[in-house]
Length: 118
Image 1 (spheres, one colour):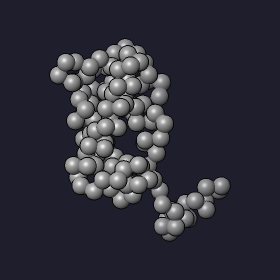
Image 2: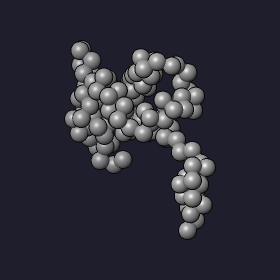
Image 3: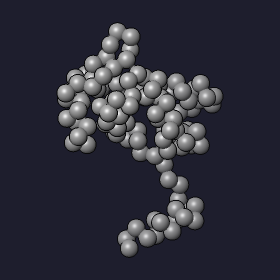
């Protein structure tokens, strides 16, 4: 019952719901899971994956909430690519993934372990 007022506000559109996928290291953690499963193997695939999330929809509706001030689809794409590249660099830095010379990547053992314990 304690969440009931929040549900009512949300249903009646009194409260805007935003994505929290970019909070802290959540994007990095979720991308690691997708990389470990073989769903994502390149930065462009990571961008395409993000474009299928609630985060992408909210960036387009409320860009300033996410620190984005561009307008065009190319601007949104570049913004998401930068965020994905930051996450990929973090994963490479902790040896969760191996990045090949062509920019593609694959999970390392540490990345698999992290994805199972998310």
